[in-house]
Image 1 (cartoon, rainbow, N blue to C red):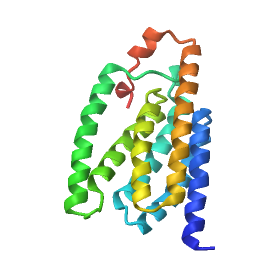
Image 2: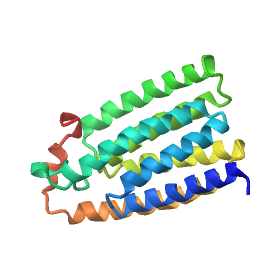
Image 3: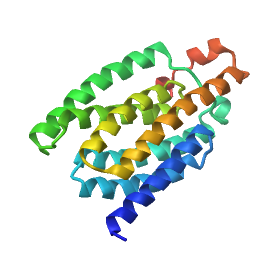
Image 4: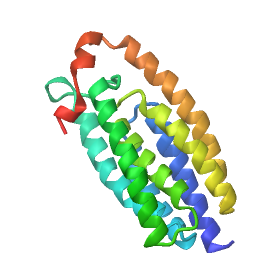
Length: 205
C-alpha cells in the first residue's frame, strides 16, 4: 500500500476518534488530538497546504491547553463545565477573526504563494478560534466548527484529498451531534445561568 495513503488513513482514524471523544467530553480527546495533528502536518506538507500544515502545530499547543483546562479550569480548580459564549468574548473573537483572515490571506498570497489563500485564511482563522472555544468548553464552538468543516470539504475536494474529504463530511455530522450533546449538558448543569454568563474565559486566559 502507498505510504502516503497509510499516513493519511491513520490521520483520518485518529481525527475521527478525537472529535468523537470531544463530543463525549472525554479528556482523552486531547492526547488523541496531538497525535492526529502531527500526522496531518505531514499530510498537508506533501499536499503543499503550508498554512494548514503550520496550523497543526498550533493545534498541538491548544490541545495541551485544553487538556489542562478541562481538568482544572472549572470552579475552584475543578472539572470544567460547558458554558455559553459571553458577548464580550464573542465580540473580541469576531474582531480577531476578521484580522486573522485578512492577515493569513495576505501572507498566503504574497509569501507562500498558496493556491487558495482566501480559503486557507478563513479555515485557518476559524479553526484556531473554534479550537480555543472547545478548550474552554464553549457551546458555540461547534457552530464555528460546522462552518469551518463546510469550507474544508470544498478545499479538499479541489485538492483531491478524498479520504480527508470524507473525514470532514463525517466531522459535520459529529459537530452537529456535539452541539446538541453539549447543549443538553449545559442545560443540565447545576451552575446558575447568570453565573455562567458572567464567567468570561478571557478574564482567565
